[in-house]
Amino acid sequence: PRRMTPRQIIIDTDPGQDDAVAMLLALASPESLEVLGVTAVAGNVPLALTEVNARTMCELAGRTDVPVFAGCPRPMMRPLHTAEYVHGPTGLDGADLPEPTMPLQPGHAVDFLVETLRAAPEASITLCTLGPLTNIGMALVMAPEIASSVREVVMMGGAFFEGGNTTPAAEFNIWVDPHAAHLVFTSGIPITVMPLDVTHKALTSAARLQALRDLGTPQGDAVAGLLDFYDRYDMEKYGTDGGPLHDPCVIAYLLDPEMFGGKRCHVAIATDDGPAIGMTLVDWWGVTGLEPNATVINEIDAAAFYALITDRVARLPMG
Ligand code: BDR
Ligand code: CA
Image (cartoon, protein in one colour):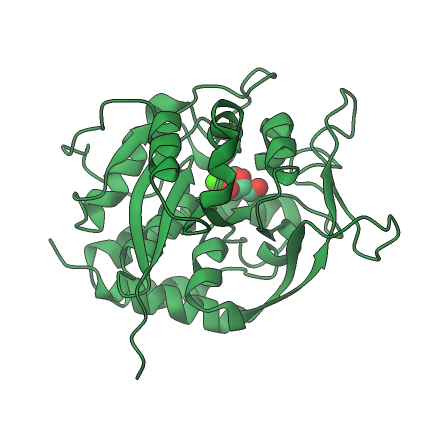
């Protein structure tokens, strides 16, 4: 079989249980993905917790070699809104994981993004964004020339046919920092979007969680515990038998794009104050005549997705 060099990625994240699983999926796939660094942002819980949680997950994956940076503690223009009502007070409720001992890197996540992208060849680095886009928006303001080094932004964010999960119009990541999202969607960088339209087709089930527990490893138990806690809120909210697993869709797309289907569209972000702020205006039917700026994903092979997660979590060293 042909050997490919792993794709270089930076994970920008606000862990969060589903972010945590996305990190494990990436860190367990070194033959496909080289994780250059993890940049934490405020979102599901405050930055003081997301940066700790990011380090916790690197340690659980046995990957203390991956540098973790703390980024922006609040969105560009709006006050920070967190989501402890979904994720619990720690952001990683559901698993009893030790406090990390690996250090946080000195320096700001946005400086790491700017410096790494400035030094990188044209279209070489993929940004995997799993939270509000504050760090990426800020980097683009500080150093617009870095856009050309980004191969692609693959983001979890937005919602269209499915409606919003945080307001009737908006999905959480975009709603928390719509101004940063606007900067990303107008940057000219190639974008692939995993909106609620696809993540709501990637529901957990009792059997899918059991398959993780059956691995009999600390990571399998941790992931099952995290998702068991995380699912409760959405199962009640939507009346479903499982909860969506949003952020791992970003990493699964990089590992196996064949699992997904979507369409090239123009996407704009509503940034005006009012009830629609944070809405992703997806021109699915091409009615604006605007050139597409994103691939919007709305289909997933959910069985293959959960099989991939279980397979990769099984690979992680017992520690
Ligand atoms: C997104 O918001 C957070 O709750 C999740 O981590 C995910 O990134 C889903 O709307
Ligand atoms: Ca997230």
